[in-house]
Length: 51
Image (cartoon, rainbow, N blue to C red; front, side):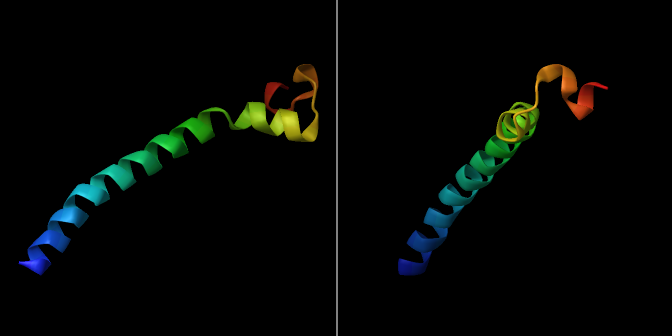
């Protein structure tokens, strides 16, 4: 009975954790240019991506 509860908890936890990881990775990848421009203080016209 104790093992069944542990397996059930992992079956609920894993899809949520994997889904959140994928969501955060997509958001960070999508906004990475804005982040890089901010931390390296690039003006938009001097950005290496837009040349």
